[in-house]
Image (tube, rainbow, N blue to C red; front, side, top):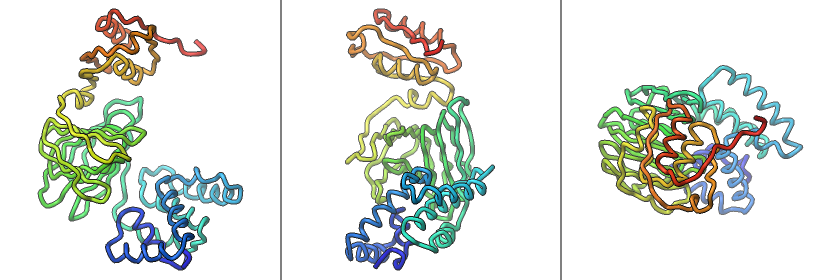
Length: 329
């Protein structure tokens, strides 16, 4: 049975992990019917996770219709900071082009009814951004972080998605759990304070300051838990979650404009300074680059780079280093 004769909405629900047991069985039966069905599902899944129509314009035959769809949807999106329905429509439009699903745009629009999603972004050149969510939860976004959440939470749970580094002080509502989704796992709480940091490769660090949290895998099963003073680390392909004891102050100091590095190597400190100030620091000797001496290093983001560089040279006086001039200067 080709996809346009099958319920494509069920496939979208499976891709998002929303299909129930009966729907899962129906989909598995359809997938087992042919290799073509399996290939079709794999292509739909790849497109869904990409979330960007523009990336799928390599095929000459698709370039023009996709450009037209993008133009129309972008006009609708102009000036908006909502993300749910337009994102659904973009993906649905590509499904319609690639698989001949003439009704999927209308069907997906129907399926996606519910609270609008709000996307909050913090630019890399701005200060720490503070917001309050609809339930009273407080959130601090570090530079380059993104946080998305519904305009209103449903009756059973409160769910947010995180990119970059975000600190959350979750409002305590016993009957309504709070879920923070990351690329590696989901953090489940009722009321607590914790720091989440994700990077471009999908690696995730969660540091618990107070309260307690459960760590859920992609299927929603409990994969671990944290008590205050612990950190969980994992990546998208990790088979398990690494849990260790940490000094939470070093992971939450950014809220106050501080950068605190504990037991860090020289290369790690240099990398962080480069990230904050947009410079390139060269460690001159190979021996110094391979040195495994560990340091505690603290500085304020508001400090001048010259001052911080002098502090670095004071901490590691025997390590010769210089600032590389940018090209064109």
